[in-house]
Image (tube, rainbow, N blue to C red; front, side, top):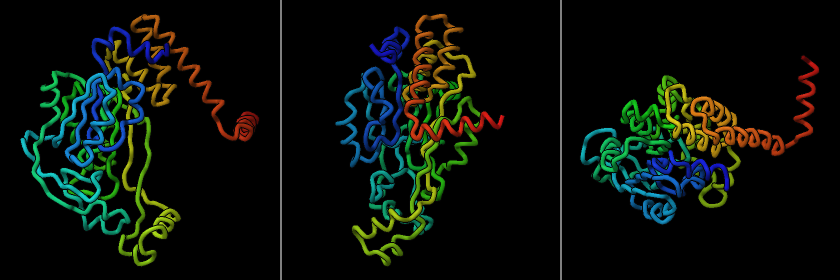
Length: 318
């Protein structure tokens, strides 16, 4: 029996399964959730029905799965305008900023194919309907409204979220969108630390210019592959710092979430702190597991001789 399985089948977590929130659920199941899906309750949203069918087929492995084919909003409106774009992954409650996007190679993805008026809900209504008072893992790719959706939750729910993932914009893709710098500023005042940051982007060349140079097809792809991309948006993850009072359940889940995100140093901190707070014998097991994971990382290092050489040189300098 793996230790993660043992933790996830503990009474505290069996009584209150992890609640995973997936906003903008187009595409594949979140890879970090594959280990924990069958023990968890997932709430998935995507208003673009063109991709939602795929999610229904792929996400059947959860303990419970709630799929909402509606707009998720931070307001109390029952209906909201929604922009269906050429790429379903760019559809949004916000209007694409076509003028600003014209200088980018991927601008065609944001072309508006249809503006529709759809049923909308907010997170407070959803949690009330499902009779839930918590979210453990908040994941959103809402195309421009990530921060406002997070802020629409009560302070108590926000503060007890264990992992929060966002995909905020850096460039102007949508009108009045939540930006990366705004997210950093807001989360800097919360009890979270930045655990992962991956910058994604596009090429700073208009699609017209690209077509003039290369035409379409294989040559265009080769040219784009050879060019440097500029930052356009980020994949940003935060983990709860556990600086507020949290329950034994949260410490157990926090360790599991940190472990599957390969943040073994923080998992070690949580297991040691959990042992002092709750005295359960499972926490020393978790500590041992985290130490083993940290040591395993040594053997995964590439160019080990070069790494050791640098370490020895630094020691000599001291």
